[in-house]
Image (cartoon, rainbow, N blue to C red):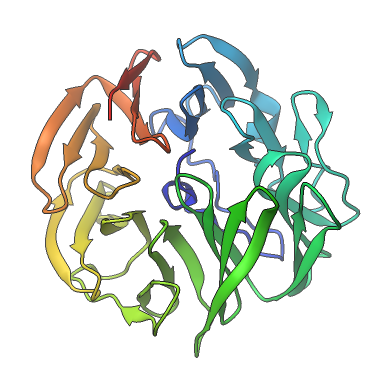
Length: 335
């Protein structure tokens, strides 16, 4: 699966979500929002629908209703087997898969953040106030509920075995194994923060400024030339942060900066377009998609490959690169 960093997953217990927020019609190309070696899930702004493609590129399902309703979509153990949850306006409908209700919940706000199947999942639940709980559904044993207080966010790595959740001023590390998800560490900040991305080794959270977390030791402030850090893409050996903006004429731009383990900028560039940025799980390459092409760069920001005719690109947990072409076809490139 792709990292939740790529989706900029941000779920507030008040019911607002930006995980798969829909932009204005016809403004952006289709985007891969979840990927595994078996297929992809695509958010198609122009067709106003989510759809799932198997590895051969064959469309297995299409759901315009979930897209129109502002739902979030993730994959279960394999793509394109989806779970839909949430809505643009509370109360949320019950989370569902293609076969029906995925997980029962009486909460007004109920978003599935990650799932292997209905017995191994994480759901954020709230009555719509500033409090709620993180519900860990475990393959064996009782559900575990972790209290939340304030805006909540979740970011997980490409393997979906490491995640960082934030609630108010807390950042919590989680690990997944055969027994499900469990909390393993945490950091406390002087201000509310939200998760931007995670890998097996590091994560990035943001409050008034952005910080690198390693799971041990103090958070390290990120210092770059960007006016603000809005998102990031992380692998075990590399990290980039980025921001999107528009000029006075409405033209879209993307600023990207490489960042080392000390939070220092190592390189930067500006792209006159709104780009998608995804990390190889190792962090040894990143793919930037814009202007109908995918550009692969190394940790120093140097271009090592370019694939024209690409609308969206994402790495699997094994490092394979999935390319959604501008013609709607699916291509795969070896690690």
